[in-house]
Image 1 (cartoon, rainbow, N blue to C red):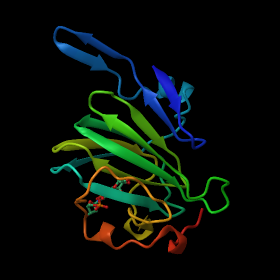
Image 2 (cartoon, helix red, strand yellow):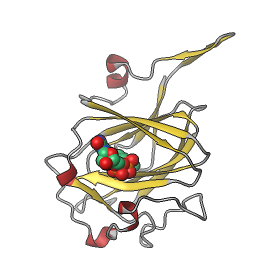
Image 3 (tube, rainbow, N blue to C red):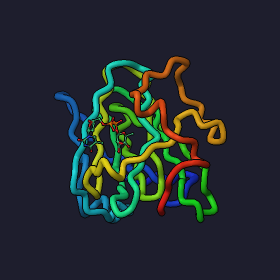
Image 4 (cartoon, rainbow, N blue to C red):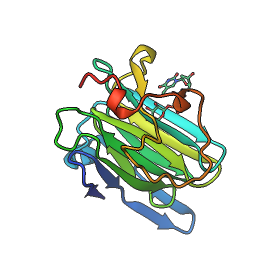
Length: 181
Ligand SMILES: Cc1cn([C@H]2C[C@H](O)[C@@H](COP(=O)(O)OP(=O)(O)O[C@H]3O[C@@H](C)C(=O)[C@@H](O)[C@H]3O)O2)c(=O)[nH]c1=O
């Protein structure tokens, strides 16, 4: 099991050990002690599961305001995603910078998304199931978003025909977003 850092400080992947045999495989998708040793020192309170039918489905870019800000640990149990994290802490030296990684059922990688970052993904294949743990409960009144296609971010989403929710089509640009962390 290993940690793979990204260009954004505090944003990293966990690649668990996968034990394959004639039946298939076994893997620990979360182990408090082992994950904590790699930096996932987080008390999760909610597990989420989203299913996207079509390839090219984009969900994001999402965050919750303080005091409901969330740390997330994201993985894919079926299919694959291009997973994006954007630093939206206005005082941060890396404000507005983002990283994109591939998480898939095959690579078993998990992405750690700290508070202060917006998160979104694009499904790369149909019938993709994403599961993630969060350390603060869902709070609709603190729920916010940033436009997935904000030109100042310039994220190269791997689709020419994004499938979006109505909500996600209407978020403000990062420069106009309400942010309190
Ligand atoms: C996120 C969430 C949604 N819901 C409800 C609200 C709504 O009726 C329905 C769908 O919500 P959304 O459209 O916000 O779901 P979705 O677009 O999948 O939102 C998620 O996107 C990814 C990228 C994230 O990072 C998550 O934190 C979350 O924001 O589910 C909950 O009950 N609990 C939750 O934790």
